[in-house]
Picture (cartoon, rainbow, N blue to C red):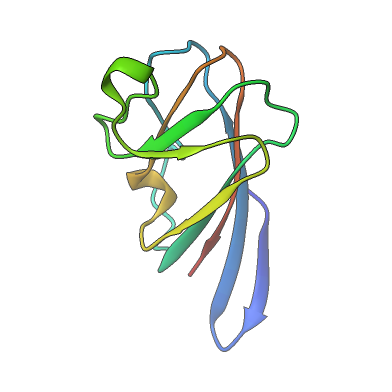
Length: 101
């Protein structure tokens, strides 16, 4: 993940996640980065909506769990990207994120 020093001992860590299979929640990051908060944006090129939340996140209309994002929309969460999961309506779509430490 690329890191950019923003001064005062803080960094911005940028990353992304493409979810392999729709209906299966996947963690955004493979390791903790000690982020204070993370801005998550649904990729503008996505064709369907997605949901972000904890490991129980579910995008399906019948049982929505988490915050729904449509292409290009974003949400700021007071979490490390390691603790954020994503589920998509369309396989191989996903998010980009900036984590602030």
